[in-house]
Image (cartoon, rainbow, N blue to C red):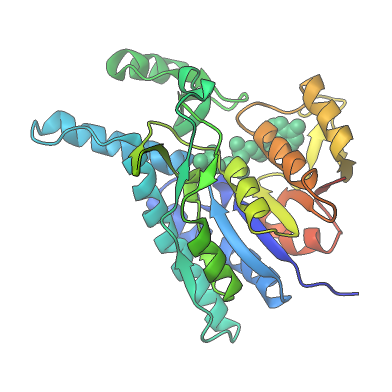
Length: 314
Ligand SMILES: Nc1ncnc2c1ncn2[C@@H]1O[C@H](COP(=O)(O)OP(=O)(O)O)[C@@H](O)[C@H]1O
Ligand SMILES: NC(=O)OP(=O)(O)O
């Protein structure tokens, strides 16, 4: 029997591209994939990543402050806020246009500037792991480290990137407002780039120098919204074990305990597939009937129909 689901969808880098013109094109494909699910009657809440974009914004703002003594450097939390608005703007308009093409003439789409509280004592502040910005060669990375004091790491065989602190999300500050919008059937884009990281001090929310992982923020959001499903859309159709080796095996479906075992074995690369599988385990393990799906952006519709992707369940 057909069941209408409340779904939190986390969009990976391929949903947005790496540059302004690429993003304008990529969001159109993304909007089609999301509207396929909306057209099937599902209630969709959208979260997006911001790794390339927040790196680009941070570089631009740093260059500005180097050129102009009157411009202090822009905190990373503000760069995350800028990325939410810039990505939300394109995504919101692409979704609006696609919805109207399909006859949803009045469905509102709204981007919520979202702050996410983190723990100031999170050990992640002392151990930067979140890759942001462009992929660089070893020589470019060495220059960036020397010139700007950035911490650079090799990223899953794809080149070198700057890494920043990535504390775990503790609380979504605008959760009540998001609940009201979702309950009222608005299409909501929120927790972009994992949310603007903030630390609570008395009544003051102070920006933290970090980028939260959007897969973990999506998981928290899905739990708080009591969603049926968390869908993580990325650049691969399925999760694999022995990824990139001759023994590679694509996984159709795995239980939370199988997934935990594979995590322990180190089957998933840190900073890429590992946070997705960890978020999927956390959500699917958090209540009966909750499932998580990891698949390719263009396969979202087939994935939800059980035809492809990797489904994680209890
Ligand atoms: N075990 C694995 N199974 C599938 N893909 C993996 C695995 N380990 C690493 N990957 C890589 O992880 C990538 C997805 O991570 P990433 O590109 O960082 O995510 P995002 O889509 O959120 O930007 C895949 O495109 C793939 O290259
Ligand atoms: N913030 C975040 O998780 O971004 P990416 O998905 O681009 O890494």
